Length: 68
Image (tube, rainbow, N blue to C red; front, top):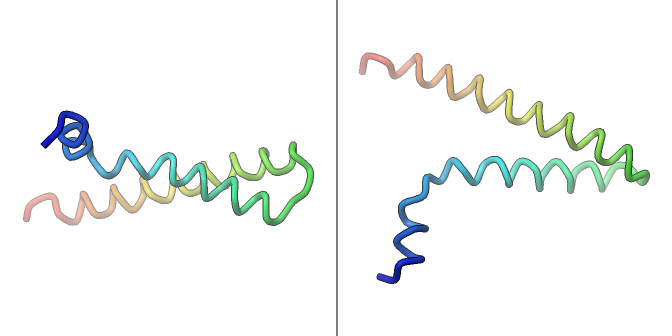
């Protein structure tokens, strides 16, 4: 196994959620709006909504699995 593959294997998959959320927010906003300022404004809002939703779901799952 090469060093780069070992590094990739050691990274946590949840760190991919942040760039994936950014890409989804930008693509969705760009498909709905034409003005660049409006696209960026809506994509930031959608990104924050996605992140907040994921944090709430994570907290709920963490609480439910606390004493298992």
